[in-house]
Length: 358
Image 1 (cartoon, helix red, strand yellow):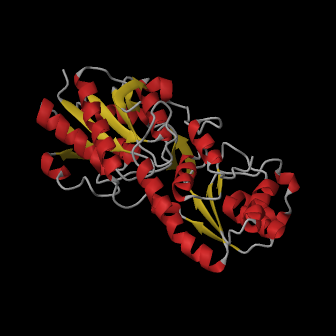
Image 2 (spheres, one colour):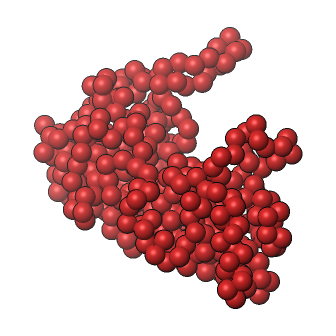
Image 3 (cartoon, helix red, strand yellow):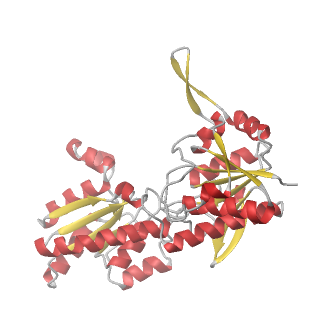
C-alpha cells in the first residue's frame, strides 16, 4: 500500500517542470493522502540524500514559473560518478546508495521527471528493484513512446518568435539570416518553428543536406524577386558527402563546433550573399511555459500519481493521439524519437516550397 512517494527532476531544464511537480504534489496529497518527498538536483540529490518534504504551500503559485524548484543536474550518471580517490579521478557506481536512501525514506515509488538520459538511468534503477513512474520532458521532443513531451511547444514558440523578429532585419539588409536551434539528434524544433514562421530553408539531423542544393534554393528565390532568406537549422544538422578528411584544418573547427558557422561560411562562398547567424541556445529552455505545456505537464503529473495508485510501476506516462496513457519504461529507454523523413511534417514543409537540402 503506497503511503509515501518521491519526486525529482533531472537533466536539462525546460518550461513546464514546475507545472509537473505541482500536479504530482497536489494530486498525491489531495486525492490519495500520500506524503511527498522532493529530491533536489536530480540524481545527484538522490545519491547525496538531499531532500525536502513537499506540501501544498510549496507548490502554490509555481505553475507559470520556468525552471524547477527542485533543481536539476545535467550529464550526471549515477552509475558512473566521477570521484576523487587518493588524489586521482575515479569512476564509481553510486546506484546502490540511491536504493539505500530511498529505502531509508520508505519511498514506495519514485516519480522521475526527465528526458532520454534520465529515463535510461531510471530504467536501470528499476532493475535494482526501485519502483518508478517516469514523466517525459524535453524541448527537443525526442523521447520515444510519446507523441509529445512538455517543454517542446514553448521552445517552438520561442524559436518562432525569434524568426519573426529576424524577418525585419533580413528584409531591410537583404541578408540571409540563419537561426540555429537545439536538436542534436532530432529536428522537431527546427522543423515546426520553421514551418510556423515561413522559413525558406529548414535543415534537420534526419536529412543530411546538400550544400549546393541549399545555395541553389537561395539564388532561385533571389532571381524570383525575394530580397532576403530565412534558414532554420538544428544544431545537429550536417552536410552530406562531407567527411572530416574533406575539410581543411581552418574549417574543421567550425564544422564540428557549430553547424551554423560552417553553413554560413559555405553559403557565402557559393552565393556571395551576405548572411548573419543567430544561435538561440538556452533561451529556448528558459521563461514561462506556454498554456499548452502547462496543461500537458499537469496531465502527466496527475496521471503519474493515478498510475502509482493502481500499482502500475516501472512505466512512463505518455500522450498517444491526444490521450494520456502509459508504456513500460523498458520499452522506451535507450531509444530516440526522430522526425520521420517521409512523415506528414516533412511533406507539409515540402508543400510549402521549403528547401530541406535533400
